[in-house]
Figure 1 (tube, rainbow, N blue to C red):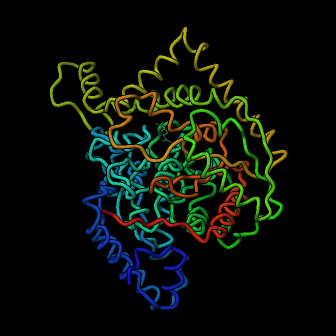
Figure 2 (cartoon, rainbow, N blue to C red):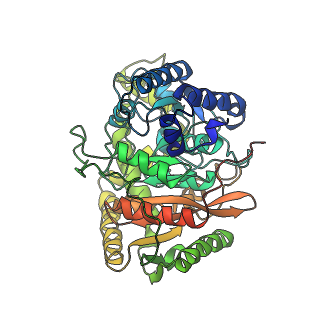
Figure 3 (cartoon, protein in one colour):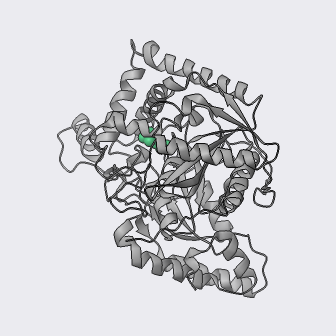
Length: 486
Ligand code: GLN
């Protein structure tokens, strides 16, 4: 039985019916990893021994008749910017090459207390900056649907591992699209939760006011199960919010009738590949046939969103990354003359080009004389973008757009042109700017490459969003998420 092909929800049921053991599930996933990892390169660290040990403990608990969490025994991979006690957490940077955190992120504590089985740590763009995972200091992750193409980024390893069957579910982080964009490129489901619904404690900060951790899976139900586990107030993160204990998976409803879907014309204009546009429009039409109503809406500030995102996120990054100075964490240059020289060499050698570009840009927009011209304007735009979404949600339940303007591009195609790379985020950054939840679901293939549809919800309305995604998934009879890897 190829257990790695099953969803978390199916495996959970099989475990309870004693049709398989947690050990067999873990073995199946690790034998899949052995088979395809040398082609896909999703992982930076594998935790095989610990995972098999944990799986044995789960089986023991089941045979002792203990009540376990629905996700107990399910293999999960974790993006390498989420702190794992005793397991290297590198952020795919030379700066943190040998960093082993002395504590767990809150989401990891939750995963452990639900008895999930951690398979390892997943590749990413350095410090989550990028849209292709090509900015990793360590390795190049490939798209499981076409090994000559990128998996997207920055959570490229998290999406590729799930698509390749090297994990059942995974965690990514999303500052401007890093869960949704790679999910779209790899043909899996990825949720960026409302800002404040998941604790950021232990997530290595990129842009604290935009960052959120979120789940990736092959089905909407799996994403719902994982979101229920990780969400909620945490006293270690003052921006996290009390939201009770929602059981998103249990409450899933596939009925689309009466759902009001907004279609913003700004997301279907120039710059969006016509095949992608067509796929997403077909998906929306399917939903309409199933009883949803479609409304054209306007989000007029959208064309300015990318600029304001790169100003805001780089400003915060330049401040957050100041802590990597060769004193407190990670890499320190071996030879230096004095303290200033040590700082300079450590940061020049420890960070990659993209990270340095963001630090310079962020420092510039925050510097006196330029603060008003750039940072302040970006902040004003942030307010405007949020207001436009609030207004839109007075008339619609969800908003549908493409997740990315294109399908997965070739490795090397955009890496030399940062501006071109940044346009991969054109449909996703507004959601982080406004703090909203959004999910990417597969909505077809173009030239054998997955296309993603983004559904956007109002704040803390994850259930509405998941229901819409689930409704669409049921309508198309499930997603074809596991490609042949050749
Ligand atoms: N690609 C975007 C960037 O490079 C988004 C990154 C993210 O969401 N972490 O900033």
